[in-house]
Structure formats: C-alpha cells, structure tokens
Image (cartoon, one colour):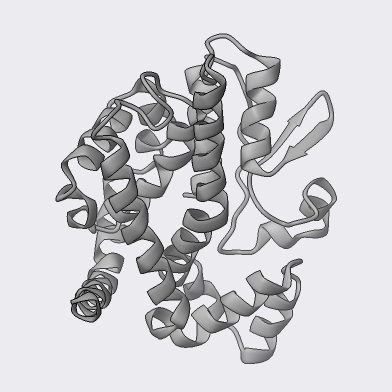
Length: 260
C-alpha cells in the first residue's frame, strides 16, 4: 500500500521490465530491521536492488530506471516539460507524500503499535532514523485524526487538487501531452482517498477526476496498484476510512468558512 512503491511498480510496468518483488511488512516495522537498514539507511520503501547495488528514494529510482531503460520513454523530449515534470515530482516528495502519510498512517499503521505497551511503542518509534518522522508518528499514534498534522495534510491535498485541476484544463497529462514520470508519481496518492472511500474529495474537480480515471485505466496501474488490493481489502479500508472522512469534511468546511 506504499504510494512510493506503487509509483515504481507503475514505472516498471510501463517499461515492461521483469522484476522480483520482496514485501516489507511496514505495520510490523520490518523496514526498521537491521537487515533492511543496511540496504536502506532511511528505513523507507521501496528499495531497488540491481546487480547487488541498492538504489533508494522513489523519485531517484524513477529517474534511474528512465536513464537505464529509456524505451519506452516516460520523460518528455522538451526541456521545459521536463522541468515541469520534475516540479510536480518534487511537490509529491515534499508536500503530498508526507500529507498522505499523515492521513493513512493512523488508519493502517497504528493498530499494531496500540496493542503494545507504551515502552514497547517508544522503543519501536525510537528506531525511526529521521527525527521529524519519529515525532510525527508519536503525535499520530497519540492523537490520531485530532493531530495538527491532519489539518496540514488536508490543506495540502486541497491545494494540490485545485492546482492540478487548473493545469489539466489545459493539457492531458501533468507534464504535457504524454503520460510521464510525474503522472506515475502523483497517481498513487489519489489511490489513498479512493481506497478509503473519500473519492468525493476530488470527483467534483472534473479535470482531476478525468485524469485519475485515465490513470486507473492504464494497464500499468491495474498491474501495479489495483490488482494488488482484493475486494475484501478494499471493503476493510473503506470501513476504516468512514470516521476519518467525517473529520476531513469538517476540516474542509472550516477552511471554507475561514476564507469567506
């Protein structure tokens, strides 16, 4: 369910590359095991290993795959379009990804931790390599959807939906006329509202809704994302998302009231 991993699986499928999948149990914190941290010192997914060499950070992996396997290309020919592609990939990394994490983490990651003692919880979270991630996980574990991170995340998603809707009123894909790394990077972050039953959040933006529908209909998305979630799993995620959606709606309504 990691959007970063889904991004890379989409790219691998678009390029028709053969690869071997090894799952990392994130709720069980297998990403913080000594063995995994040797491959990926940040303790995040995905990690691409080719010829025994690990490549980490999903946007770097994406560009690595494009450089090494340039056909079919997912990078525009026009330099300005490449700049726009990278702008949106950076926006995903810096803004959308942490926002998605804040919205998703309390619903899929916190349950196992809450079954542990406070001391056990602290020991596990203390192993997270980066301080901002540690602090955010503690807030989300303790406060859930009442954490301030949720308000910030909703605001970033709102702005992203709005900006993308305007952009996609002028062109078919994020970086221009063709599907690119930017679309592969962004689409999995729409999977989060989709799978938790929050699709009304973006469906009122016609251009965004049409773009995501076209992404979902691509063979690469089906193979990399949709086929990875069973009907039973989607039902479970929808149920988990119900109460969260009410809080998200309240935050959106409050934002609208404050802007009047």
